Image: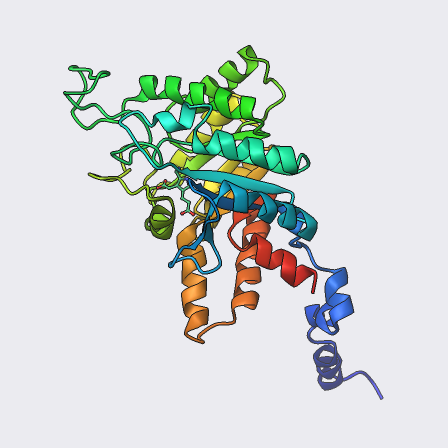
Length: 349
Ligand code: PBG
């Protein structure tokens, strides 16, 4: 009964495959033990749109379940979100009147400063983050001052239609202080102007707001996925596009450079936006920095999932959760998502 080649082969065959990862997938409980990432409502930030008027909860057609809220209706909604376990919201303002410099954004009586005060008065625990940009407040819909011959800030040495960088930084800084004075817990510059993080950090420090963090939209791409948002916030540019300041979707190395600049300027959190088509960027930044990383699952990502689900082509809850876990797996610590309230409902059963 010597060991034959045949039996040795059969022993090896019997042990094949040596590794069986499926052992740890057999039951729900085992899968939970070995799960590498989880979604909890406390990781999520819900973007909210606030408009003038009273008793308004106007549906946004391309974003089912999302609304334009008047302040009086928004305040109890935020209280409800807090009870569901959502601890952070980001505000976008829709003013009634717009002008060439977006003055509603730095008016202490502007829509967002008033909304911040009302929310914080009623819900002091809620983290209120201000999206710091001008596109919702300017009549031309661009994210700062535009170089137009008839305007007060015209610079004949720069191209017509150019988004003026440094004068716009002054306005971003001014609005940041107004929002901080109103009670904002965090400022999130999203204009993609050069130096925006440093400008905001230094003005906050000078005005007694050293404790207010800056969440930098570090890598914000010029994306078609912002379409539904521009309907929701009425912020589409009236001419041209945002490609002279937002990043080219083709560029990966440049995202690293943008993030390095924001970190050097004092960003506390760096964000990638949109999320799903840019998970390589999230992963790159995760590997390169120890700072918390945020990813913004934008309006078009939300609309796409809803549209497919409405057609019966995908299961909304399953695919929304899968999209969010993918963003966490890529390296995001927190996610800005319009699904935040749904996730809280789903998690609470
Ligand atoms: C700029 C801003 C935009 C979004 C967030 N902040 C629009 C843009 O850059 O055109 C888009 C968010 C989304 O699509 O959900 N204030």
